[in-house]
Length: 385
Image 1 (cartoon, rainbow, N blue to C red):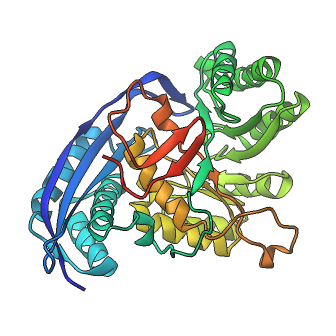
Image 2 (cartoon, helix red, strand yellow; image 1 turned 60 degrees about the vertical axis):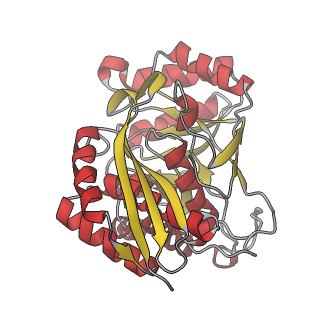
């Protein structure tokens, strides 16, 4: 195997305005707060080249870093990487580990850098990036890999949240991730109830995923779930309603739907501990785990433990979303159909897809990576550009 040499690294701020404010239990942003990473590789034997993009996407205060931090550390890392070589996945990991330690790279920054390197490597080889993450050519008999994403409804006035559900439903979206856990200034838990009631009134029977962003108590999460059921809504899952593992586990064992850990599921060891505590699911995100390689590793562990899986993002463009779709593809061998066989013999259940944030941007400066038709995302072999 020939060594691959990094012949160019470029980083720049990536700030794309949103259609409207993105408000969650712990904060608000009006534009993406990311850094774009562009890498070019050259095979030292064949002289073939490949270019890849990666996105280091901050969402303060969910991420402990912000765009200026990412820009500073990734600029330092780009200087260290220029001219460096690696061989194979182990060499890639070792190279990034060394640079991460020297430059003090946050996991968010590492995710953008690793994604760019993997996309560049895949282009150089002429294969889709998910091959580098462990997928096999015969994994899926379906020629086109396609998934259905939800669409996020941020915290806002209840009537406006209901209007957003109706607007997106008219565009073909069928699953709505509703942000809850609002603070007292936004109406508190009563405001969450009002939002559920307004959605049920204007869009009866829709499918919801309730995301508390660690802003609820166990009792509040349970009560809101029951309220949605009383209103005739289908709730598919609860995402990180509380910050701590014990109430997440209690909800996991007492409710008939998955309870997905997000903010508390950062590292591999975090996920191992959550599984041991009895939490029923985990949300994979590149920026939490430090890139596609670790996200795929955590996803495989979750599969072995029969945890429910969700694939999400911060507020990212199609650059970050495309990288996450390759992780999903690597974790999705074969046709996925419901099964009534015992859990130990059961095929992996479909991953809940929450890769919608490019739809929330006022403009999309990138092309490729995947094709979007309403909520349906079809993965393309080539990375975003």
